[in-house]
Image (tube, rainbow, N blue to C red; front, top):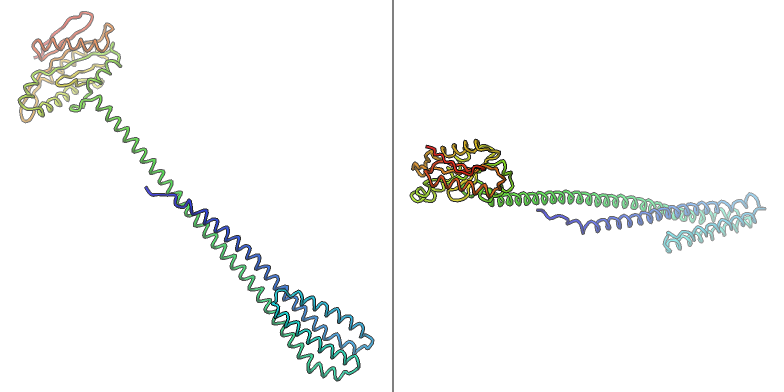
Length: 389
């Protein structure tokens, strides 16, 4: 029988590993999506910073169109630069060196704008235009390129975080489904093996029970039957006489005549064959409801069920006649006879008394001519002998 149950100590670990894996991937997925949103926010701030710098560049030329607006321009410029500082300080996703380089670039750009604004404030428009072409525009171009590069990096980082999050979730789900599927397969396999083992165990138990029942039946049969002829033995006869209704039975005791010379001359094996042959003829001479018993040696008994005197006499006649026919034993023709004592139930006698009366009747035959039968019947209490030739 195959050993089962090997999965018992494994499946909690596999399930715990699958749960830990899903938990870890879920946490990583949330973190990566948060990282992606943070990078997207950084990209948005850099884009806004770029727009503010561009707005700041165009704001100062308002003073050329309207010389009464320097105060307004200065106030708006201060607001813009305040928002720019807030944006730069909020760029937490960028490393300190990158933020410092960005601050330096913005400060340098502010310095050029302030110089240009000072020229415009005193009416040096030509010098301001020349400065813008020589320094402001190149400076803004470099700063714009720096901001767009940082924006692209933030966008790429956000996209990468999303991709990694999605891939990790897909891989984790695949692994989890695989692990759960493996567990279900193993559970099903173990269930089948356990069921098969249980069925085999039940089958073995049933075989053992059947074998035990057969042994018990064999023991009971051996205890109640003759090992040579297979006929019921003296114990079975006692049970039949004690357990049956003696008021409706007849008992025949059969003793073979001239058996000892056959046994002495031809040997015990031939004697056993002769006894087996006699048992077969006795069975053929009785009715289906009657019981043939071997008492031991060359003695037999027959219980006639529901038999009155006439039935018992007919059976006795057949027995004497059939046993008297020759037997072929060990290549030799052998003749034996049968002395039969018949007892008919009646008068309130029990089985022991019926057996005693049949024995008395058989003894009377043995003392006479042999090869016949005698009937002992109440209430006449007399022996009737009839020789069969």
